[in-house]
Image 1 (tube, helix red, strand yellow):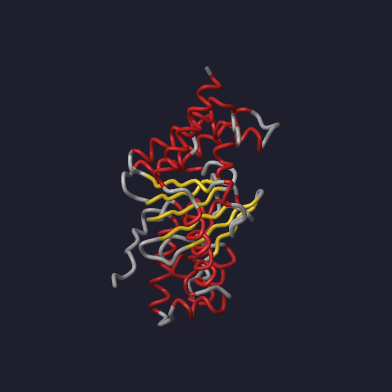
Image 2 (cartoon, rainbow, N blue to C red):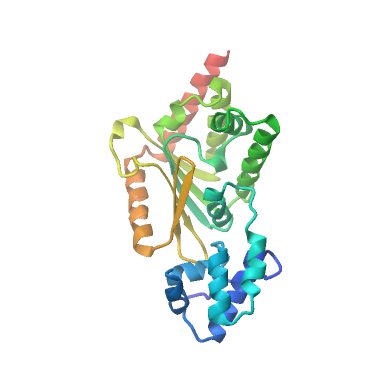
Length: 278
């Protein structure tokens, strides 16, 4: 089994902290579980910090300095991680997403952020913040489109989305924006860049009625699940909990329309929106 990927400490503050944490933990003769116990976190969580998947919080940095005799190293360098262009509830998930080798996502209401077009994203943010100045909306849209650059690589990450039929039918930004957004998804499917399936209304009740679900897998760290609600988000790293969400996703896939039929449905709905514009 391959060992943990070597981080370049100069690439980012997170990589620096992860590399130093691994070095000091191993020098102290501690396992990841040993180090996690006094912080009440799992060994998997420590591994995710070391690999740069998770963001170190200031209270954790303080304890690492204390337990590992780091003379304030972690606190000093942790400060550089505190600023993010993403909302607080999503910042850590977005940073983990950028390191994932595979992302599986269920979207109950909106097109996932990685797949949104500019017009669609602008309509979403304008509804989220109806009184915001235009420059603030511009910044939010630019940040979202920047995230989508993950898909520029033709192979990594693998992105597999299950879209509730409501995503196709909900008119975000009007028919022109919807037609463009759905054609964008269809284009990525036809380019073999993503896998997309539609969960039809006829499927009825299912395990993910409570909200959106994102599963992320990494080459050098345990998987994560991200749950998102209204202005909230939570990363889960407990192995048994993540396995339960993986089962949820597998059942969603089982209930969804096949990829080929989903593509036909997405393009058909996009064509319907096109006809409204004409």
